[in-house]
Amino acid sequence: MNILYFIYRVITSVIFVILIIPFMLFVIFSGKYRRHLLERFGFIPERSAKSLISGPKIWVHAVSLGEIRVANSIISSLKGLVPGSSIILSTSTEHGRALALELFGNDVPVIYSPIDFFPLVKNAINRIKPDILIFLETEIWPSWIIEAKKRNVKIAMLNGRISGRSIRGYRRVMPFFRMVLSRFDLMSMIGQGDRTRIIEMGARPETVSVNGNAKYDMLIRSTTQGMNENIRRMLHIPPDAPVIVAGSIRTGEEEIILEAYKKIIDAFQDTVLIIAPRHLERIKELTELISIKGLKYHLRSELLAPGGARTEGIIIVDCFGELFNIYSAGNIAFCGASLVPLGGQNPLEPAAWGVPVFHGPHMEDFSDAMHLFKKYDADIEVQGAFDLAEKIIYYLNNRDLLSEKGRAAKDALMENSNVAEVQASLIKGLIEKKL
Image (cartoon, rainbow, N blue to C red):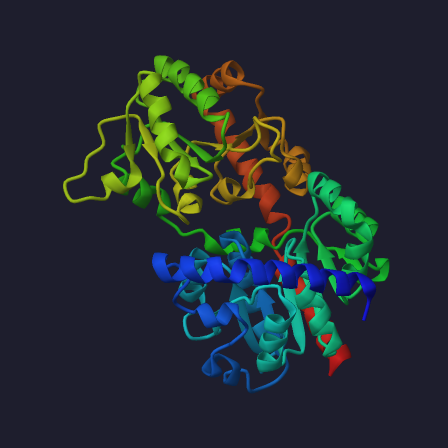
């Protein structure tokens, strides 16, 4: 056994022993995680394991809601390219599971992923017996990867991305990650920078390629005609009212956006600000800040209640999984985590609806998308509250220019609209080598 993996097993064993009793007490008294708990310990339901009866067995792991939507695009392409394959999807969150069940229904079994502790991982792998194990984006689970490789499973990373910020953390344990990443048989990275960083971390260069972002495909497929009107009707917003959607806003950005909004409504008083905080637990702080600024708001959930009517200009999104569709109602979208140094938020989601994208100077985590946006002159960068207000007012006064920015953003997205199929083709090649 590799000495680094032995040390990792010892460390995770100690952590598991220390945390298992508090964790079980939390489950018992809170009720959280109680359902499907055994899946997290590697006891995959027999009906799920037995459903993988034909062709190559492919296990796809996706965590975030965005990753699950990407998985949907890739799995759709895989079914066409590898007919007869059996596919199972794992996730680690309740929201992820709910979305996966909504997207896949009975076509693809959905399970909770096992905790990355070697006995539990071995249990899950032995029950599923996959031929191919696919991780999306930056999911790197050492025990899972190493135990799968011991069983001759081909391992792939699709839609991989490694930011400049995250690699600084990996550097502290580089020898360990070099050992883990060398087990991958295929890595499809989003951009050239991601390829360079993953190789620096220890991936074998011959296994790493650059193929773009499969989220492009997912977003294009996810748009629905008439969504703009449906969302505005649901939120009681008139068709001609200017709407700014501020998505995934972080601590430190709320005040900037609210200051800008106060200036904007001096020029366009019927402007509606829809603000979606990245973390819903911060809604109380956000509502207090809005009140301090002398503004009023509705929670999105209140507007859906019987008899709900909008009388205020600010709407706070207090539900998970709705931001993508809400972007469709916007005249302008602002990407959160970009006015503070947190790497930005996905600008592709509003672009899919043809909504112009405003953002701050910190978009490092989406450098591939920003490269495309710059190529098409499709984005508007701002530096603070005054700059944000001035530029929004300028474009609201020049609607033709605003529409051009929205069209350019959608054109940038459409340029890379077959990435999921390309990545599925890579998996097909891996299957052919395996079988």
